[in-house]
Length: 303
Image (cartoon, rainbow, N blue to C red):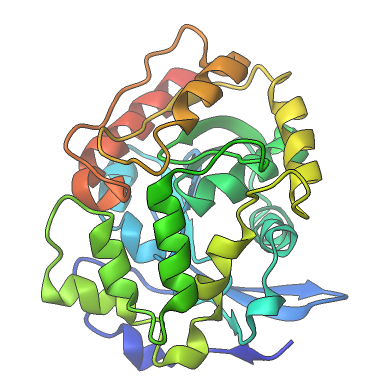
């Protein structure tokens, strides 16, 4: 597997994101050594919060949450998925699979950081991967905040707007990362913010991750990831793990997934599930501070 590594000078002068970059080397006997980049904020001994981004963003997406969570005494950890941000980038689309992304993040969170009592905050692919981590390692988690995400098995129809995105990524000769992020926001990104979303990808060679991810979402029952996701649903449906949905009111991509999560997650019963108003798919951009307060209140309630 050929890996690319974004030059560090691409990340100079990021707006409101001056956290020192941290790195973890994952040594897999099959896949080899892959480096994950991440940032942290808050006290090292605070309750750990694992902030997982999705497609086609990176940990920069969580810059509005990090100071709020840190001020609440929480240890906020925001890694970049392999293929995104400061993490290594497999050069071929075929190098990416759902199972590999789950394994890479499992190794990062548990083998390297040895996180325990962690609260997952997952949005978009951050939930698709994160909910698998919870199902396969429930003893490591204290709770889950699902934000505009789900766990598809290919047995539910994906909305038309998602298929439009899927096809646009597949057909685009040049993948405009910042434009795709902007299309999922209700607020207007600044020039500097758009440049930050483009920063991990100096040219098209670096974009195999963003190009691969739409094709890895299970859209039929015979998808390679369907069996593992069905097994995850079975486990999750039997876990009384505290669970909160914090979806926005303006995301046509994931809106249909919220009722399924509320119905099937035992730990969601009897809890308040706030709707983040005025936000789109990337609610961390549109209402990051509001989402952070939901997370902080949720974690306080776990103690």
